[in-house]
Amino acid sequence: MAHPPQPDSFSESRLDSDAGAVFVLESKGKWWHAGFHLTTAIVGPTILTLPYAFRGLGWSLGFLCLTVMGCVTFYSYYLMSLVLDHCEKAGRRHIRFRELAADVLGSGWMFYFVIFIQTAINTGVGIGAILLAGECLQIMYSNLVPHGSLKLYEFIAMVTGVMIILSQMPTFHSLRHLNFASLVLSLAYTFLVVAACIHAGLSENAPHRDYSLESKSSSRMFSAFTSISIIAAIFGNGILPEIQATLAPPATGKMVKGLVMCYSIILVTFYSASASGYWAFGNKSNSNILKSLMPDDGPTLAPTILIGLAVIFVLLQLFAIGLVYSQVAYEIMEKQSADVKQGMFSKRNLIPRLILRTLYVAFCGFMAAMLPFFGDINGVIGAIGFIPLDFILPMLLYNMTYKRSKSWLAYWIIC
Image 1 (cartoon, rainbow, N blue to C red):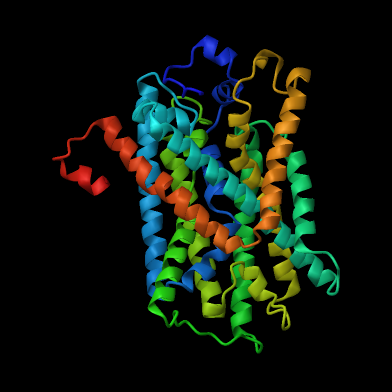
Image 2: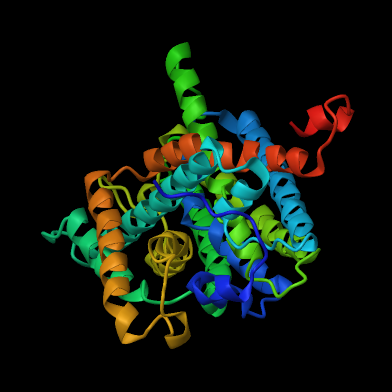
């Protein structure tokens, strides 16, 4: 049985056997680079599901949950950054979530629990990214070829092929310029979708808007929990230690600036997308608001140019998101590289690397074709992954790191 890594500083011997450590610790990341990574990890096309989440909560509870989730996750990520700063000052700089868990929580079952949760999140996000990218291609195709014969699974296969090629990019830090483009794309398609929803709501073909909730209390409760899980997944970030590790040491204080930058983008995008989409379609909102704008049984409800550009921008950003979240999975699969000095692209490493990454992306593509329910996938990811990792674990890590007394009032507030 494999043993978890023991916490220690990065010695020369460890660097010689750890390709991931070499790439990260040689990086020169600035706080705004962390902001780019954070924005790509959180602000993605999943915001297109926000109107769908609101239909299970309504206006008041929808905005309340959105605000509370935003405040709690910002605070959680802030606490985790403090824990990482504390460990770095003590000479133990961690570049992976599982190493931080082994240091603070020990090498027991919690270590493996963290690995399981993070792997589930990263795989779920990879599946969701491929699925949504396939849906984007299908939307473009159905608009250009109304009676075409291609099915969703065929577009998913196309996206999977592209992701296999892009998966050969080595590390987080090498994605910083791509993630800056991702940030710009997220703002661009959000504004386009908001404009399209407003146009749809004001057009003569505007759908009948009904903001009522489910009539049965059991159905209403189930929808509410699903919506809360979706919002949790949208705010989720299961790779914060890996992102903070891209910062050039000392990283103290830099992550907070990156978080402020990221949540400024969140404030603009999340609220505008949820308000405009739910206002335009009410409880008829689709799990992908683009499908609501292009219904199967009627005319397109917004100018084609707006929807077309939004779809293209979403598609491009999805590749960046897939690359960011897959890095952790790749690193786990390739964690023991005995040929670091010759580089990750040496002849010795190239074939195993190509095979492992191809198999991982192919698995995500297969699952996307088998589970073509984007909104439901978000809910599952939020329920089993992001909620424990982003809403519970940071508080636990903070209290155990700083060893707060249980009689201390803030201990119970933080918990």
